[in-house]
Image (cartoon, rainbow, N blue to C red; front, side):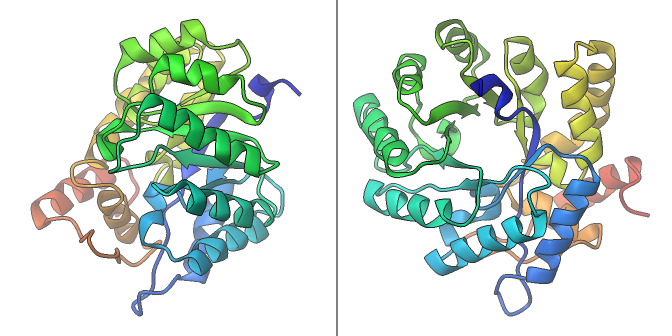
Length: 297
């Protein structure tokens, strides 16, 4: 199968709901999965950084992935987030979740220790060689302090099993360079809702989205319109959702989107330290926009 036809469209970087006791809220997670599927999203990504993966223990990580896979029941693909700054531990986690019925792995660049481009290449090579699932690498230098450069991605595209990249560098020039260098079947997903349209225009195949947690149908329609060349419709939906896209990052993700989902009655607004709930002034901005979009009364 062509990589370009492997996955495309709108995938949701799913939040992880916790209960008052701080543990995984399985019923709320099931409800979130159902909400996403009813909204028409093309695939789900549990245990990414939007899912607060750095604060999930190994057993919890597996439990979230296993629960999502079970609830999805093969209706759409599930791509499990796996990341960290210790390659051996990332490999171990990737192998553990690969056996849970997922369709692929999303793996973020190691954070804090700031590896060189060669270090990044060897890290992802090790992950890809350790599992029999397709791997999407994730570049988000604003969160990791390291930028996965186009020439390194080109090298990675030659490794069997590495099929694409989630690009959240925020540098359209860099993404344009990447698009001009990679093989035609290598997948580029936007990692930033607000720049989904230009990335698709450059040859991207979709988005791994935060805003689709709140508005799965509208964000999926936006992506499908752009992929289908219906740019007027895509731009209209972009304008409609743009303020919420930006408000989702008014404080550190996923605090704003969890606030929004709590206002929508879908989860309790519980985050794990060091993340905390949003400030009241920002909460009011989020509520105002949700009202405009008809997502809360």
